[in-house]
Length: 152
Length: 229
Length: 241
Image (cartoon, each protein chain N blue to C red):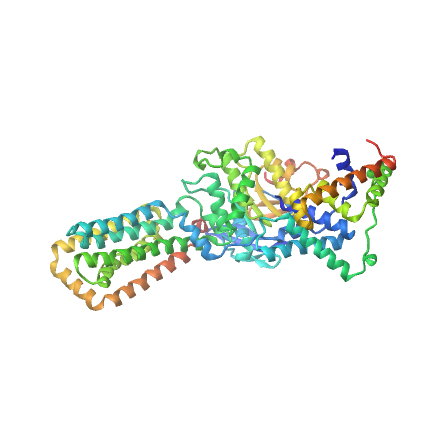
């Protein structure tokens, strides 16, 4: 897999947890470096390990600083995006209503397009549990979207 | 990264090939334009460390040109190069990858990726001696970038490429130039127009123009013709 | 899941553009191989001729000893110059095929390529000696060490002469100058054997008494010539264009 794609995926995942561009990027890079130190190669990045390392680093970060005191980036919206803004806000709200674990699943499965095997190993849950929770999260998201008037 | 060339000179028996040349390069594509015999190849050979200058210094972020560290950052396509007769395109790139210190598994994967990028995947296992000039040149470009260089020096890279290959090459170089120092020499003005953000112009061993070239400054072709009359 | 929903999620989970990505990935250089690994891999690029010739010498020794062919013991030292020449000819491959410029700019550089092309045939020669000398000594009676020295001396003499030939302006131009030199040495050896019996006896005596010293001196001369060849590559032809 292309290194850039791997980087983007891990960064997106960490950003989802940390919500701060600069810290998220530091953690992403640290994730890579730890993987190399542990596995001793850089050609065969195994996603499940990378996610696991990234998760642990995020936990450490939260432990180090209180979650509320982490500086969150303020969304800056470019004019081009403004058209979709109302729609986006609705979507964001619907997603935000879901529990964090469900959001994590949706991100890994549908944005980062990871396989069920990778996700279940990275999160340390069984495949069966994964499918069940994913299904529930998808249903709830759909319901949430309909409730706030998003249709397509 | 900054590549610095400082008062570089090289003299052959009765001719000054490069005469106190100074310039700096950073990430991006720079074209080195000049007529045949202007000293382009001599300059580039000194920048790759294979030719020792009479005086002057070349460093990349302080790393001197004739060190292993510098070479590990370097990719180079000579104006003219050969190959061991038994080599296929794949073997050739893997051979260079080994000398560049790439680990075997990584080298294999990288070779396959690059053969795809330069459009030689389907002839990867054919002997290079059966290739056309343009195909051989594409193999040359692939070997130059197999180690993901941070400094890429290409001596007349577009020579022998047909128009389609030229377009492919331009796109590739533009992509690489985003985060690599690329210096390529040519005597064809249109190559500069379409690829290079920066321009170095060379005549009789000296740099006579150093900077960007935009359309407001007039037609590069005309400027070039005027300078080289 | 529907594609629309996927798009929705893509937007929701989009992160600001990473700023240090390219720099980081560029610096994340692949683990590099060691010089030893590089030398091992160069063995794969040594020309077939060297291997075939080396194998032929071994086969000849084994076959001759088995069948008790009387000339085996004398012929083997006479073919050693050719083995030396074939090895030295490896050194000119880069120049011959226009690969020098490419090999010079790599991390390991041209010098290490050349070093590998000296070292690998050299080790091959030692392997041949290790196999051939005890076999011949056992089959025809004699000491292993003496047999080895009788093989090694013509090899080393030819090697150091060929290295000088290859560096000379004439040798650069002559494709098979080394081979000619080795043929000359070999012919000379045969001639001496047939027409100068006194010389042969004197030689045998000398080896018996001073062989180890002679081999050591020749080995040092050869090593010096190799060192000079390695360092002469710093002045490629285009320096004088």
